[in-house]
Image (cartoon, rainbow, N blue to C red):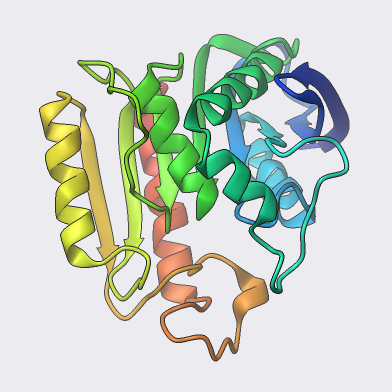
Length: 240
């Protein structure tokens, strides 16, 4: 196994976007591709490492950028400024996700007919919006995502299979919002499943949140490990 990475810059709505593509160069020929969508902070090294972990599983992965080249944030009062712009324009968000997916599919290591997406926090919302809008992925995994619906109608049926990995104590995803998501996806005839992890909150996969004192927002090793395994099983099924 020889996992490699390269920078990937592409055009999209609003300018240029820069992410990192990872693949195992010891594997010959195209293989399924996975889009990795970052959290509130935007594209960063943690996302690149997720892409490399997926490459080690035999996939090709693109840790994408939906904010724009050079637009990144850090934790603090302005952390959400780029996310807020896209939350206010879900059509633009959809179109940027479409451009990111097209960039993934265009890589020679990727079997463009077999792609999926995973996302974290805001990225989890993005995964759901990809499915809601009918972007061409076979499946999507949302890790501690956000579940509010966009201001456009879902496609019906939603063709992408969906796995939602949720921390039960997540203050951004109260039980009633989780029930509403299940009802929404059922109404859209989606093939969906929700895994809820007891005593875990928001950001349960984010190791930078170890020791967090923010109520309901912290890394949780068990939920991280269990959700990553659930994702692996899900991708095997999706790409079968």
